[in-house]
Image (tube, rainbow, N blue to C red):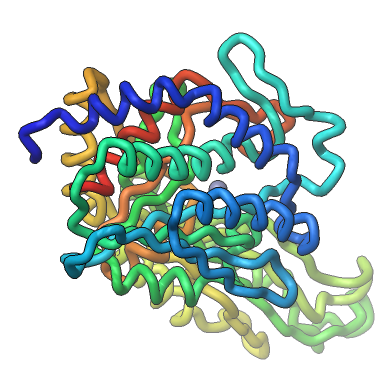
Length: 384
Ligand SMILES: [Zn+2]
């Protein structure tokens, strides 16, 4: 911990920059960037590239065929060699199609700023930009090379960016994720459930339900039995949930169902529980004679266990205290790219982005006055 109260200095400086923060944020929000529309997304990527370039950071644009381009931005101003690397992770894609702005325009009212993707996570991206401003202004000697990775497909599962994220995380001593915080107090996400999707596919044998029932094997009956069994794996106390949320099967009421399938939502708070669920899934065997059972899928994001973020959270709390603020934590039931970085062994602190509410809804907003402190907190973490 440095002797000087840098966090407080960052905060003092960033409070004076709030009008610029807000206008940068406005520009990003007005440039709609849906995960599924490359051209508009690329325009948002242009703005980000330009802003970082303006600050003297080295900007590498990673071209994408289908999705918006990705940005890998590096900042290391000193002549000496860095002791290691810190990764700041964010995505600029949003869940809103182009045109959403017409129904939810950018506006500031009552201390809140509204607009598509403002909370998840254009305000977070803006805060990172101004965190760099603070580091440049206060001239703190850094120990780590800073890498900022802005991806374009987080909202649709990060298929195009996953490898890049994992590679960069493996090289990093810590990862800071700019996903939104939780609630009006801006709780940091120190744990996230691992998430997955599995499919149970049953094949039976069709037969006339009245003329030859003995020749049929009812796939729906088989699937029902399997689900009764699977349902027992739920353990809310441990944060394990298994839910059949889609089910289909059969053709007509007088035909014994030949096929049926269920899609399961899988979640677990601990890696050990995730593995146990996967083992159990693959150990399922048909119950009715003649039925066949196939299992597909499984977890695609491991849990971000609290132990991956505990040390970083302690640091963040201490910095907040230096700024005269308090910082709380929470566990999120959903995954983010932070799950991917924790899974490769990188200490990860998530939910460092904006304070606000209503992600993925028509009423998405951020608390404007919380931006300087969040940016100052990030700056402090990056200098440590
Ligand atoms: Zn997000």
